[in-house]
Image (cartoon, rainbow, N blue to C red; front, side, top):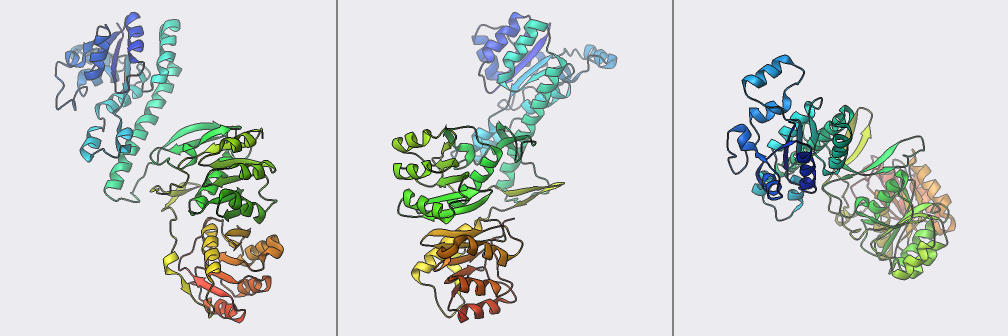
Length: 510
């Protein structure tokens, strides 16, 4: 007689599964609550304690940690010495292990969970059984996911056994599951003990969806989400209309969100190829969108828009007239939704907690042979601004400088942002030379540059940027400072009566 050990926290579908096994002549071994619900359903169940000859103890902390359990799972059925030992020790084989673990993740996500409660939800016996069964998948079927119950039953009914290929696949799922489980526990203890960068680190993510392709059609891709911090991220967004998001949509959408979370006023961010092409703040979303659009009417074509307030009719009408790939917003009015849903290819995402910005996760970059980790860039330094020129900025200039500073912080380096009236005039991103970034921005902004302010993500090594800014009609500058030649830039600013502020903090983004 084949024997299945069933001990599950998630009891979804387990009664039906166990009944089908029993009907096919399998002996069911079980523990605790699982044993009770299976017995109550009319199934004949052998309790684990009857197999081991030892009772459950320590409030259930020790149930399955016994040689008659692990020996029955791990013994090689094609090894004569193993078979001989099993006979000598009266160990019977266990041919299937069905187990899912204590809800550690769910427990740590509950704000009311105490440390003691979290500790008690660290499963010990479950992972041990799963790993043992997965190690011996040549002879043992191991199931950790209730979604696999039907597959197992189908193979048993149609073929009389679970195929080697399926057992191998199920073993792989087990090691995915247990490694994820251990990673979450490790993360919890690292946070509790303030270990920011441990000697070894295991990062764990959950697949949200497969993607059609990656950055290019010849690259395969998938979207994985963090398990503990999804609030206000694209993994939480609900698609209301349009095709599934692409790899580039998700990347650009995240870039738009990163910028948007810097602002409290009604704001719209337009992103193209990971850089902002237009950002605007206003008294309402329609005004904010108009400013973002007018910043760069060409680059926004085929771009991504994120708004921190509801998309209303006026905004929807403006969006309707241009080609936008994705719109992300906390909500849409019914009339606005009707207007936008008339566009077949536009993707509309609702993200209720779009303004949420309290994340403790790493900022990371994959490189060949490793990964770079750092704190998320949450530095602002607005309180420590230092005016270094003879002329002070006006109140309006100061507002625009701080606006531009938020945008340049999230623009690929070297970066220059020109702004006026709480909207970007032009963005010069990703140049190897800072003067090139400025020249590109000036060229893009044309006549609108006159009267604008300038933000630079890092210091000016020479005074040429200040001189070029003055000739273009830029009236004020915000930059980190810190160059050995800061005085050259300050003197040039004084020459042209430009107000300049130092933040003391740079914002490289590579």
